[in-house]
Length: 38
Image (cartoon, rainbow, N blue to C red; front, top):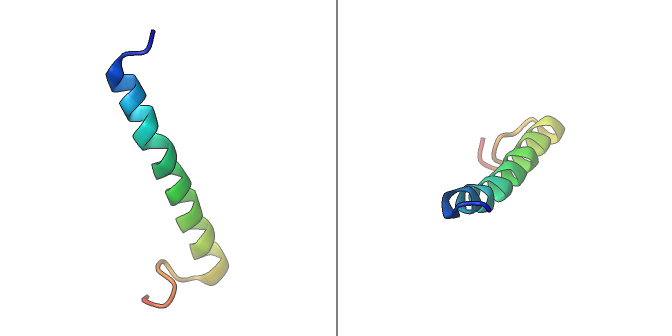
């Protein structure tokens, strides 16, 4: 049985990892951390 804290961490962790991977992918392809800003 997972505790509520484990479930919460997983619920927060997955979208955060996805966002991080997209950010890294965007940076590698465009050379810009935030496209259009930096």
